[in-house]
View (tube, rainbow, N blue to C red):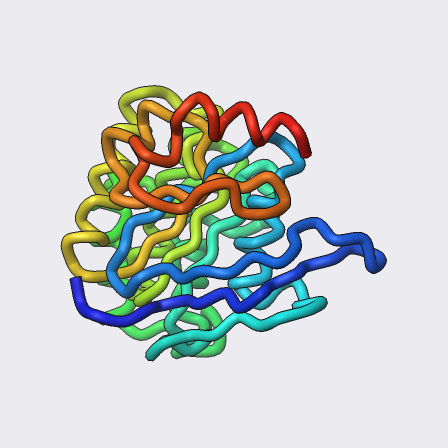
Length: 233
């Protein structure tokens, strides 16, 4: 892992209608780290991720980036928030990962199309490129979202509940992709609910309850006394 930080939070508060969803959060995600964000429902996990992605404005404090620009980020929202009856096929959806370089479908070149097809193969969706989004399973859709992130070639990858409502085989395949990203030196931040999964696969864990409860190695963070504190939000 390289020295330095990818994302630094300086006394960060994010609010909805001036009501803080997370408040006075300080710390940093090291460059090349693999961090899970955990916490109860309403703890501010998605709020924090959206703020880092630039989707939500900062109310107080600041988010500081190391050598990362917005073009270096890939953000995957929860699958349930994505409209799947949009009239495009899987290949077109994956190619939206090139938009910061190409600007639209019509400008996708042959090399980018080749990369997108390879990404689909990498996630186990070879020959799925012409299928519509509405014709595939939840697990297959999640795999296609990972393929889109692959083509983005981002330094910072933000994943909001990437394993919700998918089977064990799909989860294992996607965890392998995340591990590969980590080995490549990318910074990965993911919201997860499965504590055993976090302990087994992630190097760092941030436990939130609208503020930081603990931020360290998973086995240190996910202690019973810390988990009890999250119930007091």
